[in-house]
Image 1 (cartoon, rainbow, N blue to C red):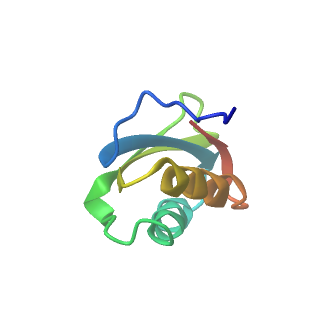
Image 2: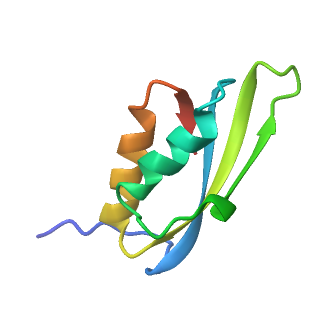
Length: 89
């Protein structure tokens, strides 16, 4: 019996990644650069940022066009290992 991964997503799709990180002048560029390693068509207008309520962190939403669960997983791994990123949802 083989175990199949099930997902509610249908690929390809545009997926909104939520990224939280430290307030840093390079945060937005770093997130975009990291996502582009696995989704090279991602453009600056695909990312929006906003500060946290106390201003200690910044949140970014990146609209990423992904073709597979594997591609999405690779983007998550790359972002979560970045030094400026605290959380990826």
